Image (cartoon, rainbow, N blue to C red; front, side):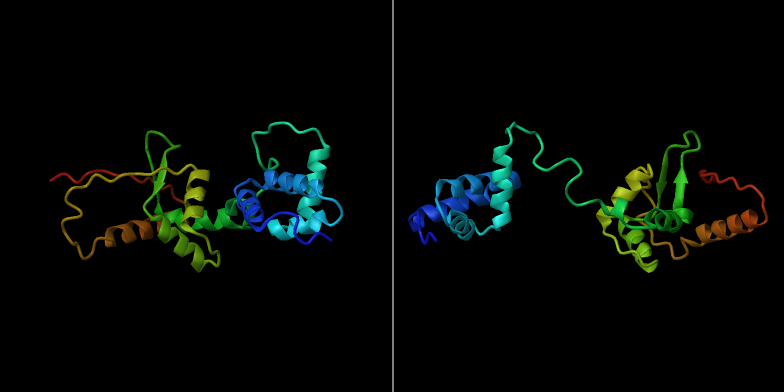
Length: 194
């Protein structure tokens, strides 16, 4: 067993270099260094580079195959999967959460948006037992083709209107009554004329 093949300073440089490499290059570098040494070289390099013996074995396997320059570091499809694709029932829960908070363009049915913030959607999903981050909410909005919408109201922010949401609650209740009765509902966003 090799106790110390290289001076302490070289060992520290090797570890520093090893930590700067990608996952695939780490394996290959560890394998090359272990191959330079005789019996006990694998365990010595594992100790210096603070890696597992499997890392060296995989690196040696990589080196035995013909190497080529690859654009990808990991195999296609490797890495952590998106929560949007992994959490069961997430799409249905998301759509039910924003069902009463969606709007769209009357001229283009592909343009739609929601008046809920990313944080509010995440909180409502949490109430349904699905814990997601704001980042996942953004991915859901993108997946379901929601767009950002900038409101250009200059007066709304200046006044504190105490019963601001009553009209929206009333519209929602009327919409529900008509929908339950099997009647069609048409929603129009128009300016109030004085």
